[in-house]
Image (cartoon, rainbow, N blue to C red; front, side, top):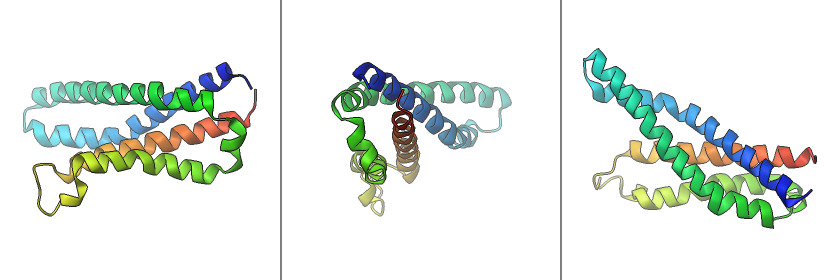
Length: 148
């Protein structure tokens, strides 16, 4: 398998992972918008539009960064055979690894002392990161197993 084929498969897997994570986290965004919009129906509709636009841009920017800095080099440098030999450790590592920086950045361990960052800030990003990376790596492994 050529590097160009692996890059195309990694790009497809990253897109599938982003779409899956966006769909999974969308109900949380709807809940947040409804909670913050009050009783006004027009405010709720505009807030839904803005909320989804902002969430789409934030997640797309993050996923683009991951695609450029992590997925592309990994697809080009790591042989498919080494990934397909042990898929379970690869998937577990790819799901746990992105949640750790989020936990560090949002100071999850200080939740009892609440330093201005709520649990919702952690869970929405952690859920997105876990779903995105899990679906992306699983899709990539499936695409690699299908050789052509």
